[in-house]
Length: 404
Image 1 (cartoon, rainbow, N blue to C red):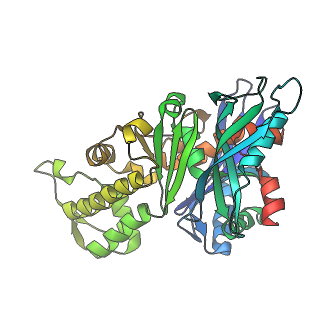
Image 2: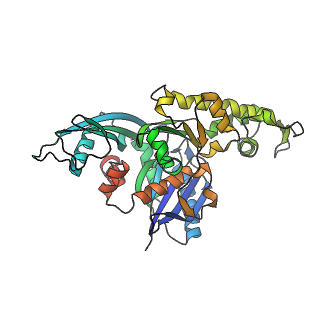
Image 3: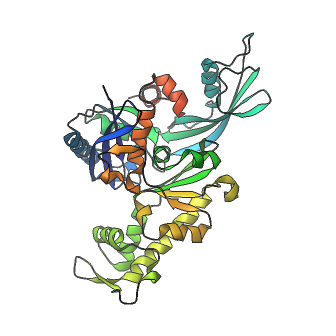
């Protein structure tokens, strides 16, 4: 019997529910998709619980209708400016006579790395081991079964604000869906758009959504750095609305339909004036130049979030742009010109079935959440936590830290 799994991407502009299954060959089949506009969200966080709940309910209903299956539990993405991250070091001794590293030692050293001072309103969402060291041997991926006296770990710790997570959890659970785990959205997007080779040599992922730009740097096969910028597609549309004197909804539609960061490539006989729905006309070049200026600014902000200014050494595989805003025509070329590093647009991969709507960078997080879930679905919770890097599984986080 196929193992069913669901994912819910609660974004600023859209909510996407995906129902899938893991077949006998380990491949992920999409069985149903529910995509609806998002209400009650701002910059990745819930600002109106009832409106957000209604949007989530409708998204789940459509996915269930398409698949003929019921969503009972799901993997849910988390983002927002309340997210922050630090790197921490942990160390423990191997006390047994045989000096053999066991799984319990990994749990002890990860627990040691998590002994960091946090404000009362924040808790750890992920504690992800970057690499281990055993005595004088460094950069070990999995020390279990090796011999040594001292075990060290470099850990990337991601923290979240309790109140923001509680509001998101309330929206999901109030519609009768349990949460299997909360996943930081750029980690999920990385599952869907990055290759193992990119993760190994070093790559920057920037998921440009509606309310936030989610950044993750992967290196040596693991997460290296994460950051959330509260600037994304919403700000581009807002600039268009103000600069061109358009209602916000019309500005958004114009951005999606005509947005191009290189308006100078227009042929001479192409009409440079666009007629909008309310009867007014706007200049095509003005529309595109406003978008270009905002996207240049965002690209530079992405680099400012990097932990190292030597980008060639940090990320030899360059920059992968994904998310709905990465659909803007010419953005890949603009990134190469503006920040002068190799760039590509990342589309979701690794699934089959009802996927026509999902072949779009806007759905990288949703597909990534599904992949994350299927890759950790069949193991006991503590095994899944070790492999995925999520030390605090959802039930542990919610019961111990969030009090729900």
